[in-house]
Length: 201
Image (tube, rainbow, N blue to C red; front, side):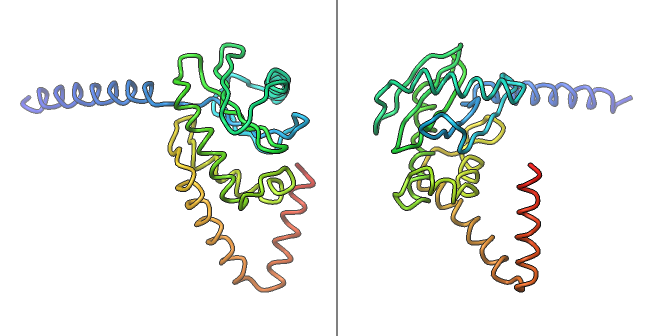
């Protein structure tokens, strides 16, 4: 009988903690997607973090619409902001690449701009100041790692480009070490497997 009041207190405390976590999660800066498109509006690297665009065709339509809407803009070294379909889109062009970060209409533009700046700075660092489509495609794995370091499940984790690039470089070094330790036969088998997978996708 004495345990019941303790149990009730524990449940109330647990419910309070859950409510606080949910409220905190709602107030965290979030991103709906990050897009890296080429000068023709085609995908280079994209990540979606919400179900606002549930199908591939909806995602491609959104990408095309955002590209067309911003194509005539003269976004240079500074980020530009546009409202589009109830979303805030912050974007920037570097050579033949178009970088976009999308947030909800209630999201803070400065936070979205800092996510964009962190992404472009990290990509610039990883690609050794040679930011173009060809180099980006050659280093696509590192760019995708950048996206993973910046945002997780839509929640912004990091916006400092140098920190993001450092973490991605550390992942790259770990992967290079394990590949270097493989025998030639293992390396060829791994390459064949990756090639086969890429053809099936």
